[in-house]
Length: 271
Length: 271
Image (cartoon, rainbow over all chains, first blue to last red; front, side, top):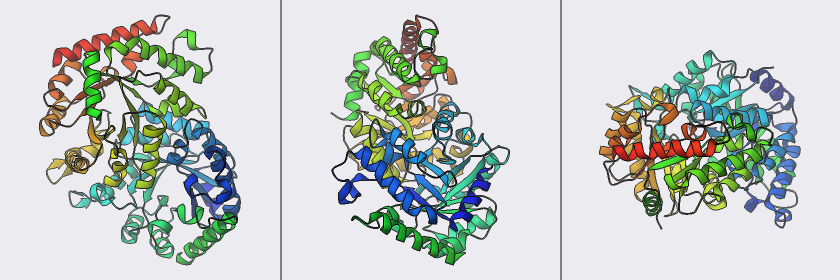
């Protein structure tokens, strides 16, 4: 099954384009997690979030930094969390990896062979050979950074390259690099500038888009779907903190589910 | 002690600008490691390499991908290897991290707080807020990708931005972003194009340079030092595979030491 087939199935099952970002920060966990070792707390917290949001989310996106910050057992916790995600949902490793070929191949092994991620986020700055190791399997995808959602995104991504912004030039290069590979190339395009999002979608109607930045970062869900949901390529809209930390009491999992469910509805309204 | 003071001390102690890259690939280990579990083999192999090259190397650069590829215990192995590097040598986390501020802060915690790395390689594509969390401590440095040594480096890094190549525009931005921060900004500039290396050194005489790409990737050591060793900023020249896999028998550690020692001499000849 290709990545897009799996994602399409997952979106139909959940009736949703929502991806729940797993950025587990023990300092923000509810009271009942406070006395647990962080590795145990993260495992339990993530499992509770996955269980409560499963019926409204088509995908999960563990943020590797939050697991690496747990110390020597961080990758074990990540592996356990990934294993607890139902196999009919898409799982994206958010690591923004990018290195020379033989190193990129190791990162790809870590996420696609050791763990059962379906996709990984990658950084384009080093060129094609940093990305192609993530495109070697037809059932996997690499979501490359095109235009990100953070405050300083435009400093480099917006530089003028012969009349077009750098991110757009990179998007065309990425489309080209992905075209002959077994795996699929997708783009990361932030939710915070919907004009850019609509422009990219119109230029690349078939490319899967991963859109972070709704919720805490401020992107509007319905506007995002109106901008990005117009092509044949699928769209995944990610929210992390606004779901994970919707509540801070005993009922945090239900509160997370409510936040995810509202976001799902808001996204569907924009279609 | 600032990062540069520590690096200067280490270079004086070793009489060398050599950084040994730790890219441990169990498939390339000598016979005697073959029956060991990969985590054990990597720990032993790296410790033997560190012990045998210590007197000719000022720094070590573990490549995080090779540890992550070991699976759930990968970060534990990395932590043990880092702990076995003598404290008077500089240790660089080669992860090419780059993400939004709250995530970048987690990566910085992983390498600077949980482990005692002195520096981390970072990717500039997301802008200033992806790099500043790595510059928050005066004893730490972030080496940002400017011009890399891989085959396809130029595809994006060489794009023309108002008459200058993108990597040069980024270098000026990085210098600016680093100027007000407690930590130090350094540049990663590949050894494979010494004209570019010399140009960057002449424009940024004070910036520490991390230069990968000698050895297996083809950069010439003396030419690299002649190009990069002309400023007041320090230079670190990395080689990984040509040292680690210099021998494949019982005497692999001595062979690695010989290769490192020759490279040290070649570098010193170029000064």
